[in-house]
Length: 147
Image (tube, rainbow, N blue to C red):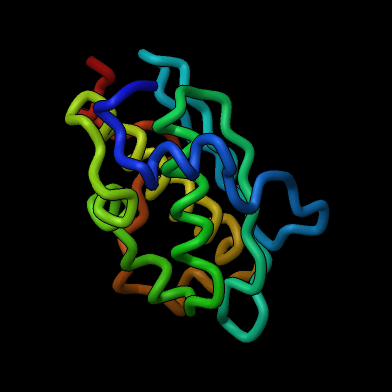
């Protein structure tokens, strides 16, 4: 990683926050990009409809690790609805921007978060409580290939 990355990206890469697993997680989301090989797994613990704890494990480039770390910082303490409003662009902006060829990493971070919340809602039988939410299929979104 060189000068094309912001100080925040470098900080979250060198000192990632919330790394690890939550053994009794309420929801787990795993997403990946088969083209570049990045894989993100996000664990959430929900209490009173809020993200009480969140951890991640990411196999990928520095930008993938940085976006995973940042999304965990952004989501902690948020309600489920607030967490679902976090976009990949918001993650990238919170990091001070990403190079265009690395924006797919922020997409993976958003998708991993949504997949973990979806897992929680399905396991708890609460997906009907969120009828306005359209969940994408787990995995990588079409049109966001690594270049």
